[in-house]
Amino acid sequence: MEQSKLESKIEATVNIATGFVISWVVWVVFVGPLISAGYLTVGSPLDAFIITSIFTVSSWLRSYYWRRFFSNRFHHVVHEWVRSRYG
Image 1: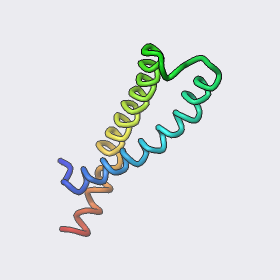
Image 2 (image 1 turned 90 degrees about the vertical axis):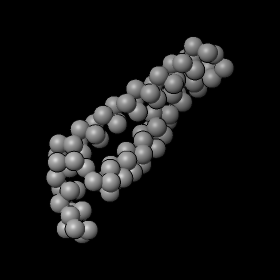
Image 3 (image 1 turned 30 degrees about the vertical axis):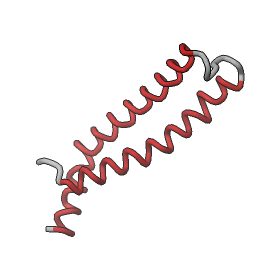
Image 4 (image 1 turned 60 degrees about the horizontal axis):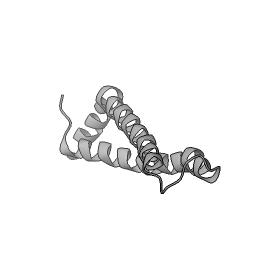
């Protein structure tokens, strides 16, 4: 069973919305304190790479788990909801 365009839009919206929240949490909990403590600096190319890597890994994990969630568990629920509303 393939996702409809609306189901894909729902998944993408959930992924982006949670990405905003998770990136804020990663900044407040991990990156910000490391910069404040002097362990990382924004001007250093290596530190910029580390900061970018932290956000990339968190983004990849979030996207992967949302994709699996929508594919396996939630896909059928969303599919039935879309079919009942829009035919």
